[in-house]
Length: 147
Image 1 (cartoon, helix red, strand yellow):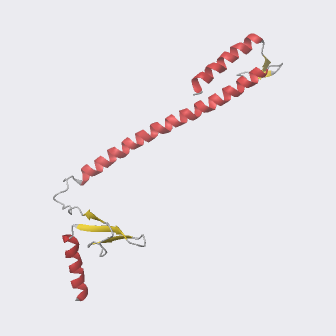
Image 2 (cartoon, rainbow, N blue to C red):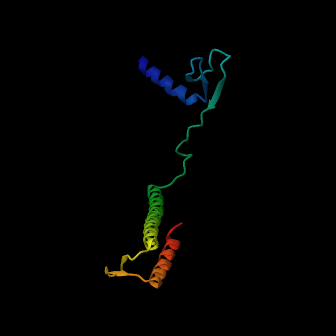
């Protein structure tokens, strides 16, 4: 019987409360209560509780409409995520192209009588005109891929 009365009292009192007091006690511990601190020298803050929302106050939206809205939102997020992933992959490829072009340019500038691998995998020596052509190509790649 006592438990029932206590539960009923708690339910009734929790629905009728509108203000909670917050303060920090002398030991530095935060306190919350339905009444202000007994020691009037301790400053307290009133926290106002918002009114309970009834089902009538909520917008009436069917379960199907809610599911449709969520599905549309998820589809938009997936599209954005896919676009960002593609952009990231393009940036990674550009960074790798930049790195390789810079390394090739350093090798080309070292000079000497070096052999260079062509597109077919064959090795050949480049004369000065071929080196200039290759240098222009590498600088073009660096200009497009390095930022």
